[in-house]
Image (tube, rainbow, N blue to C red; front, side, top):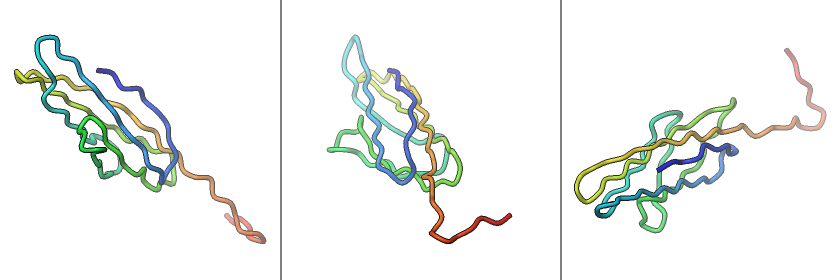
Amino acid sequence: MRAADRAVAEKTESRLSGSGKDVDGRIAVYVWEQIGGPAVELIPIDRNPARVAYITPDVSTVTTLVFQLTVTDDKGATGSDSVSVTIYPTVRSLAHGSALTQ
């Protein structure tokens, strides 16, 4: 199990998908959880617990979310891996005629 880190824009839908292998049985349980960054709601996709979606938060600076997938096989053995998602703020333009002040 290894997830690739990635970067996405703020306020967009993003998805996580994971898998696990079991040489002597089958994977019985998949659990995604957020372990770092501003809280987001993880929503299962198509009732498949190995796949979840979330909306990236509105951020003013580059922000990292960290998620962990834990899989449990039919004999109770577990394995986990984490993935970092870097969120970049949207560049906002000034309205015509506006000026920056310090």
